Length: 143
Image (tube, rainbow, N blue to C red; front, side, top):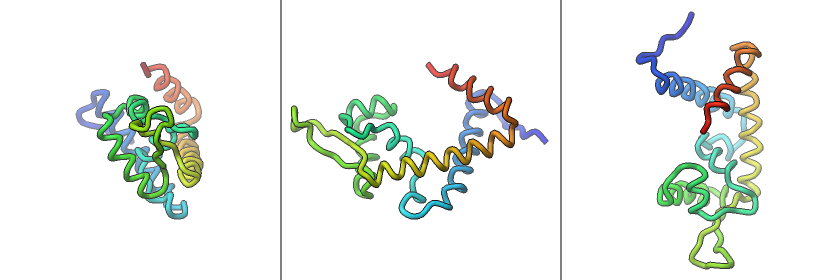
């Protein structure tokens, strides 16, 4: 049975796909031990896009597509939970550099394992050819 999403424009289709993937991610993440289990996919994405050596808050905001203010608030939560740390830039003390802590790096590793499990399940569900084609099309569609 094919699920019909209304409306069926690209935003609804991609949104429905993303919702389903997130749901599967959360289901699979239940097997993780605390504190990783509570992380949202958006938090793991931010952690995975933050280099180990750190990045200026403003540059990281551009990288993840958020405003500096929104990223600052988002990062504060991760910092309070011990996944990120904030240090002053040695060349300009006014500049905030964010970098993942050891706990944050372990969370990214755990998240990547969950993502691999979800992708494996989806590949089995859709069939290898369809899954590989979907991934290739999505990669090609990125600007």
